[in-house]
Image (tube, rainbow, N blue to C red; front, side, top):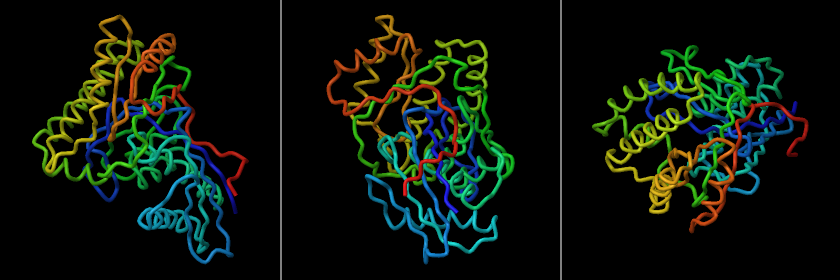
Length: 327
């Protein structure tokens, strides 16, 4: 009873920040994202009577007791569905840094959901997988469908899930992930969500604005209006980080290098390079451009000091099973 799945991380163009239900991870607003073809998590899950407890290993990285417990608790959902009492061995690997603002929990729980359900012989629909992935990590629901994805806000467990707006080949966009640091962030996303909702004066305003921007972004996608889309993406990013910075205590995910690159993006646009930025809960920056502009953007980045790594992503397919197991 072994299965392996690979799932992409995603970058949210309209962000998920804040929940209206913590237990079910129901978002305060819907969101739109793009799956990333070079930021992947591969996970193998085996359920077998030879295992006396669940185990979780991350190849090339350490996992805490808290993370192991979170994975084990999550696997129990699948055991209950399959009416199984078997424990599991879980081994994962990432192609990009974990917990540094690059949605590793999204790809992680999407891959875990598909691998666990497949190993137990559960024949789940994409919607069912998306709902389960959301319960593991909110943004993971967006890594289940393919391409450009919308996460429906919903008002219950069964109405909040992600679906594909457009396939990967719909629009020739690139996400150039600029990594300044692969270190794990000090304040987790889960902790940040709760603190912002409870203490930021701008939280409610940002949620309402995000809903408005989501509608505008969908219209920009229909027209493939890149300039409008880019402005909307940046606006929602800045709005979200404004909420973070006005949380008590303040959440300053950006570093001086983060802000420095933001300023360079404005300069590059003044030079005629059509590129926009967005940033999740971390120091690293995602630059959004069209494929024809990608080489020019990378050249500019190569002239920029302090960058550890650049990952160039095209829109990706969602979670899928593969035959190459990790053990």
